[in-house]
Length: 288
Length: 288
Image (cartoon, rainbow over all chains, first blue to last red; front, side, top):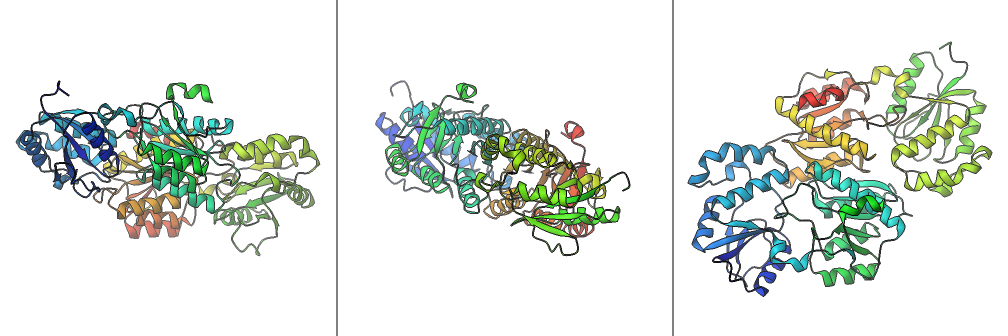
């Protein structure tokens, strides 16, 4: 990418997304430098030049960015906890901002924390870009992605769950919700999508959710979300967990959600009889 | 109660609320007839005249109401599942309504189902009244109910969680939410309040919720809710579960939430250092 003078860094949290982004970057001619977040990054990164940083250690991060000539940073993967303020190792530039940093860490919503993290990285002289700019091929497209499409009943569940997911998103809480037979049964909080799906599976086994209606999972980008971080992601395990929860399928936002290992995921979905579709949230009203 | 020609029936679901209502009714000079919901009512009702009805058996219910001269019915206690439509035993009057009844059971929100149940009971000739009309002494009042009051930080969590609970309520999903240090961490769905609190306890143990901020549980009546059924309820076990989840306290809506076994509950709260307070939701804006 000749227009960029510097190198690309990927700050890697948990899960497979950072790896897909790193491979896409390599395919695009980049030589990404991987900054593994300690206790979060859980893959073998030996194929790429990499270094480890503990969550909150902005001082080391700044040295890595300048030491490797990095001008662009992608944030990618999960971070299961925010740093306690005692873990923040500020550099000189940050000292004056520490009170507001601590306040944000202690009581900000996830988006507020992300905005702060982006600001801190950009203060080190690098630009934060979205994973989708490096790996646009991972973004969901509109319509049914596998062999199976949603039924009319599934579409009603999609509309119901999408309405809830948007309301949740506006509160800066989770991105997902599950509707079964027109009834909202679960809303995602800190437990995450897999945690919520395993709850739905338990409630179903206990007979507290209809055994005759399947239902859908919807994951949407929060309305006010900075799409440079934390786009909703699904992959093979999401489909497996949705199948265990007895759902008919999954709907995600086209253009604002990542699909990981899409080929395996769609094979699993087809075999299990689940649909996976990308929806245009601007059209959600028309689906109801 | 001389103004009532007929007898009072209490349709009893799970939990202790129906028993408190029955005792309050007895204290008020009523001789309540208890209609135990099969697989739901879980107390020893031998102290009261009673009969069992399976969920959905409107035919038997109608015969009990007319056979015992019942003119008022209180719905009280939990119902963990809605009947499958095959379980509905309609009486003659209901036959024509069955298609809409089935549709409501299959896809209505909880409030829609409740409205239908109320309509079906009233079609049998009895009036459905609220448990609070029989047992007004169980309603929460405004302010701190135990020895401990919320701190300023707790008040911010109350405002945040109340905002979420109202948004959830408008979607006809759960009544409760948990905010920790200004961050919404859990929203109640079909799992119920105790299920949500045990999730918060797990997330806390896993380090996914701050260990330095306590947080609060807020339970509110849904904005559009018929207060003749399903008012939020807390009791000793709610306080115990909130303590296990590491929370600072619980806020409920004054005048629209029941407190069961208040004396034990407040003793447990005082001992565990938790506040319990009644809030005026009309004033929620001022708390923020």
